[in-house]
Length: 238
Length: 385
Image 1 (cartoon, rainbow over the protein chains, first blue to last red):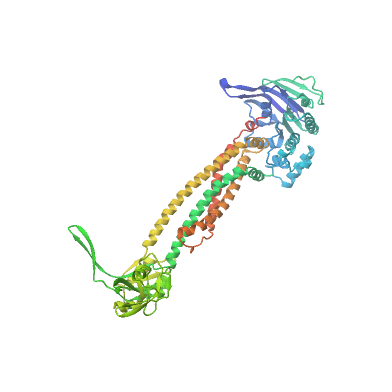
Image 2: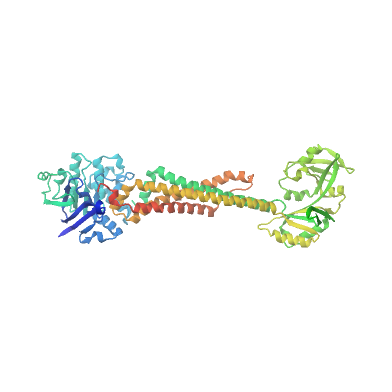
């Protein structure tokens, strides 16, 4: 049974002569617990697709549901609640809040949740522990390396234990060694049951996933299974 | 981690911007507090001076005036049948309904004398009553006894007489017992003696030229007392000395209106400072707000963060603004009243008003930036997505 279901998703920016078709009608289904990579050249529409899947960008037409819930039929507030409860985001440039400590950054998704401070702190410390950063929780983002910031971003994305994680170029600003550590982390999360959809240009990163959606000019041109172990992506040309 | 924590951390991080908002509100609030405090203190000063010091009712003999005109041109007036008040009648003032409000009554007899071949005006007064009626008098020397006189500063200079000097008037030898320090009033030109001494020298025994009355009360029924005294002394003209007070009150009213105007301008400028600074702050935080929205913050949560920040800074500005305004009033008051006789007191209503006004200004000016923040499209904010 599909968990994420996109049916003929279209996103067009502008109107008439100035119209740009970012996503030109994509349909796909993703099962619970899948680790999917979205690949394609720059400007192919993968980031637009991810923002629509993340309930952040209303499609021009088409249907999109998660666990049977028609996401874009929800009101603004309900959609925000949906993002908080169902989705975690890992951004390319980390997007940590610079004036909050690492622990406070991880606690951010819990800021609007009715829960004791003690419980929030415990959840955040646990998330940091899962990404291997339990000893640096009181540092500011500026005092940590890129790899550590990426781990904090992942900890923040998983602190409220969402069933789905969206990662946009998680290795974009990292060296090879740190990229491997981060991808191992995502793979572990997937093995624990989390559904992950990742956008990347990197075949190295894609090799950790089990399925690839390849996009070109706003259209889904390839949907192929991968073996999910590093090194299994050699056949893919990016 | 709560929305309040986020607001507090952001204030701490953006100290310069927070300081700018604080300064904008602080200047407006403290100026308003200082001006309103000054007005209130000056008002009290006038009331206090009016109630505690000096005469506020004048009793004069009734005179008949004839207005002269010739060919339609006014030639002024002449007084005829000039009368004087019988001293014995003054006892009736103690019988009026508001007699308890009479703090002091100073009968004065006036008349011209020749001293050292110069004409001077002699005023016979009750020096005990004068202590209440003219508390600003400072005497270098002693208060006159039987045949002593007190010279006004100008009279002393003109007559070349000093304390201890003797001089003769109508065959009586008088001694200068003291010199009055300059008052800036007509008192400087007068020669003062005890009432009975002056009456004797002027041959006006049992008669007085005028009576000054100090009515001591809060919200004095001056007009009522004037009519009560008029009834008790039908042959006199009784007046309330209100002109000076009215004039000062009018000046104070102008100052009050000016203060309201200045306050309004400062409130407007302060609000604009808050508006512009908060809008700049929101623009700077576009991607941060995008992250919040992506993480499931509702629009109302974003609005709350911005308003919380504004509220915290405004509350600080309200408290500091009152304290600074209070201090400024204390410093400025002596320059406005010319004395240290009146103090600045803590006014809980003004303090609460300053706090509420700062909060209202800060929040009202931040509503638009808050809405602007809430309308930020998370997709636009997070260009990486």
